[in-house]
Image (cartoon, rainbow, N blue to C red; front, side, top):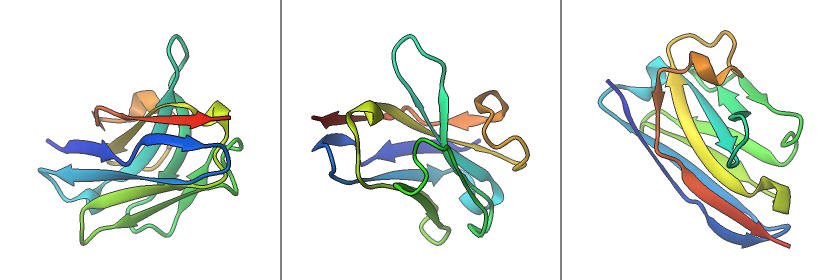
Length: 124
């Protein structure tokens, strides 16, 4: 069992930055692939970024490539999502999730454990 807690969301102006954190307890996060997803009300959950066990492999949705950076600190059992150049269309709730294998990293249904999410609001 893995418990995930996201933090770092908030209100920011367009062009600003936020850093989301996903802190794990119960198991070592380095044993899992981690993904960040976002979901607007009434819409499908959308892949944002993913990172492999060691952190050497990272994956991004085209919509955030070049603006967001995913990283992990296994010593702190935490995965981060640095979000720069934020746009109003980035406004929604962000979730982190983990699964054991890194195949199909963009498929949200494949993930085993989820956090409760953190809200990001970008004003224009």
